[in-house]
Amino acid sequence: MKVAIIGQGYVGLTISAFAGEFFEVVGFDKNEKVVGQLNSGISHIEGVESSVLKRWIAAGRYRATSNGRDISDADLVVIAVPTPLSLDRKPDLAFIDAACRTIAENVNHPVLVINESTSYPGTLRNFIKPTIEKYGKKNFEHLYAISPERVDPGRGDFNQKNTPRLFSGLTSEASKLTHDFYSKFCDELVEVSSPEVAEAAKLFENTFRQVNIALVNEFAQIAHSLGISVYETLDAANTKPYGFMKFTPSAGVGGHCIPVDPTYLAAIAEEHGAPATFIRLANDVNLEMSKYVVDRVQADNGGTLQGKSVLVVGVAYKPNVADVRETSAELVIEHLRQRGAVVSWHDDLVGTWKGESSSVLAGAEITVVVTKHDSVKEANVISSAPYVFDTTGKIRGVHGL
Ligand SMILES: NC(=O)c1ccc[n+]([C@@H]2O[C@H](COP(=O)([O-])OP(=O)(O)OC[C@H]3O[C@@H](n4cnc5c(N)ncnc54)[C@H](O)[C@@H]3O)[C@@H](O)[C@H]2O)c1
Image (tube, rainbow, N blue to C red):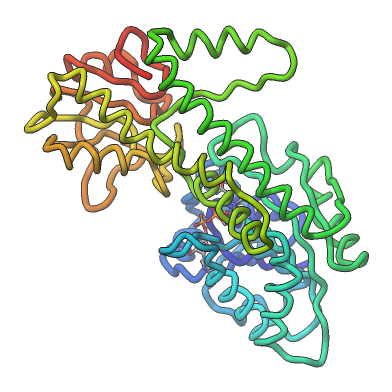
């Protein structure tokens, strides 16, 4: 069976690597540089080993392409393209629209189309199917299913194999074929009664995280105002064996998912006249954390940051990945610069970002830790400046939330 996977980013390449063991995989991506790299067996995604790609390439079971014609004889097509927010923070399905067009213009026989991109309930039924039909030939029908992706890049304990996967087809035949596909490389498949349930479950999972992160971020501010340790309090609460789940405070949330997906849920809720109060509020609290962190740093440093050299450690949105999408480091740096600080940053995993390069981890007046990769030594952070503010809770004996 030939599987075409549209989008070779975090999600698409990860599935390609798992599927390559069982199927012939064509990874379609509009980014020709990425395609060139992938065809030389070089992975740009944490968690996808280049050696695995090379193995599938050598066995004739993987190749990347930017040419739509290369997916024309696929039996199954997976959509794994970005689903961002527009400038006015509304769901932006332009990438899904383009992927639908690629499928419609190139696949001239009935196939199973599975969407893995995160979007609001109804996307498969009311957007993907009609869009492919709009752009394509009208003399046959594809099968359609959803199986939302749950991959957590950089995570070692859970992967495509041992993370249960939700799925649902628009028809029972689509559901059956979707089950057959994923059951090759996923241990547990959970069928739900409609694509809308699967789509909503994915959004609710990330909304659950967003709201709880906001709650603990607000609690960090309460604990500080009371003069008690947020970490000790959380550890104490976490001794309760039921009804509590520990989240830890931070400078905010980043990545493609938590800051974005809940807004998809809020948008569809509001379209249907339902409230999305928690989602909107949680978003605001998380966005405000960067300002709170900089306020604390400023207060501890004589009330002004004017002219002070500040080193931000970790600009990736989470540890051990090079992903800077929606990173809270960006807002922290913005607030620091607005207050006159001379800001540099250290993150060897990211290397270069927004035209700037990673600085050495030393010689600052103030260090603010936003993300701590495992490769960053605690002792080096502590010696990098006379004042260190840690937002991660991982550096002992310094200032922090
Ligand atoms: N990254 C995660 O941890 C994660 C987890 C679960 C779900 N998701 C969801 O999966 C989807 C994909 O996210 P991602 O992190 O893999 O994104 P990504 O940015 O890492 O990769 C997307 C890839 O799609 C390519 N692309 C964009 N438009 C295209 C088109 N029209 N045709 C072909 N290729 C195209 C881009 O060049 C890029 O390589 C999103 O909906 C996201 O919300 C992401």
